[in-house]
Amino acid sequence: MADQISEQLEKLEERFKSVGVSRRGFMKIAAAAAAGTVAVDGVARYAGPVAAAAPAAQDIGPDDKFYNYFLFDDPTSFDWNLDLYCNAEQETFAGLLTYDADLNAVPDWAETFTSNEDASVWTFNIRKDNLGWSNGAEQRPVTAHDFVWSFARQLNPDNGAAYAGFLFDIKNAEAFNLGTEVDGKKVTAEDLGTKAIDDWTLELTMEGPRAYFPQVVAYLAAFPSAQWAVEEYGSDKWASGDVPLWSNGPYLLDKWEHDVMVEISPNPGYWDAERVSLKKVYDPILPSDSTILTFEKGDGNQRLDWVNIDAANLERYQNDPELSQLLKRYVYPGIWMLVPSNGIPPFDKLEVRRALSHAVDRTRLVALTMGLQIEAFCMVPTGVFGFIDDPAISEIQKFDPALAMEQLKDTEFEGGKNWPADITLHMRGQEEQYNADLMANDIVAQLKENLGMDVKIQVWPEASWRPELFKNQFPLVWIRWWYDYPDPNNGYGDMFYSRKSSGKRQAWSNDEFDDLVNDGKAEPDPQKRLDIYKQAETVIQEDVGYIPVVYRLDQYAFKPWVKDVAQNKQGFTVPEGNIYTRMLVDIHVDGREE
Figure (cartoon, rainbow, N blue to C red):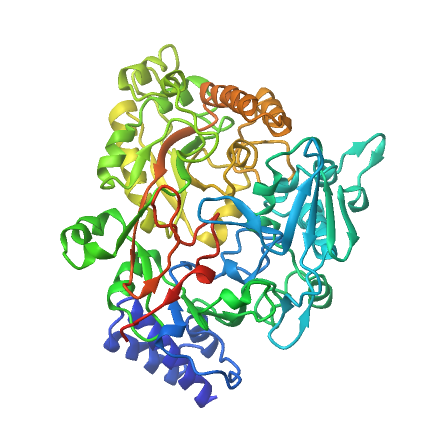
């Protein structure tokens, strides 16, 4: 037991050092543990369980390692198939397709893919005779059957997957997820448009023409799970870290020290393993407000090779001759928005929602964040197919304090008075690196200035954020949507389509809007699709189902020894993100300074 405590405390000291806890402060905790007033399992929450001795491995030099800026909270699991929001290391899994740096869908486990004439049936040809699944000791092939089983698992309403609606393009998927009948018969998993023709051929039948479907299935929500592991250990255990993880991505999970570190190494059975140069990748689990300090001062395994520079530090980096050379700019495909509930006072009144939509000055937020945002007037970010640059749309929710107050005439809130005392803006925590708190506080100040509305802020930890959000009981939400795949359906459909059994982020529902979303998905002609989504944008803005505020623009810093970070056609450096997820395959390290 003494050896166990000693080992855990060594890890704990390393963890606390990275976030600025002094040696003196740490020794108080150590003394308490020795005295028995802090339980060993309490210490283990920070230090992680004592890991089994690692097998003898190849020599790992300074240029074989990478310290990845990725985890701000402990993963809830590695089960991407059932829990898209598990916050795990995404390069441990791979799907049929993936994305390149220009956000095009490209082959992953599907070597080729084709469609029939109207894009209502897609066929994916899996790489034959592979050994892509591994738990570090055994290997199995990735087959078409893995995707048939995994898609049914995700859509099964009994599993309550938050992102089940993502697969509604597949024939009968929506009916299966909602438990409804088709032609007088209740739909089962066997009725889904998913078919393994053989081990290496997957056929997916759509609800109709779906020309954009490769962009959908390239997203990590289409990662498969290991059926045999789920069946042996159970859905709550197979990817929990308690048993060796079966995964099929470019990297395998070596170690998961809860709240401290995730460690991964190459999967020799991955189809593109020859291109993977990093022998060891460390994902320190760091509070977002300590990441820049860790990038600059971290040591041991608590360090970072790249980081997102927030507004508080950007000017310092830009003005420093050495730090400025590390900066890389990227227009990230993401949007920040306000979502008022149309079912909870005072936002159950359309007049109040419209007043809110005219009360936020987007240019003020751009200036506040040192230009790390771009004003947003529609759901689809600039640079993504579906972006609408139309003055008529921009006019619907333009900033105009006088017009905002005018909306309140003849209501009980006329003149900005009589507001409820308990209006609360709900938001996710650990997002300081995106300037979320900075913008939220300024929005609250603007609502006070322009509407006389007093708003409190409630910050939620990652673990409870989505479960609470999905109850649809928040009156007002400050939320971001990082695009999962570069198509307007990801915003209009996956975010705001209301006809699904789980994972709804808002109480707002509008039948005209939902019908337009379905029309947009089914329309093969790109220009006609855009016209449909323009109608959908008009409907949701006029009904104030949401308020687009700003698009995300990032400044990253990379250590000088990080080489071959991808660039897109616009000349921006593209880091690991929500769409492009192959940075660890593409990069290498050369000349690390220890």
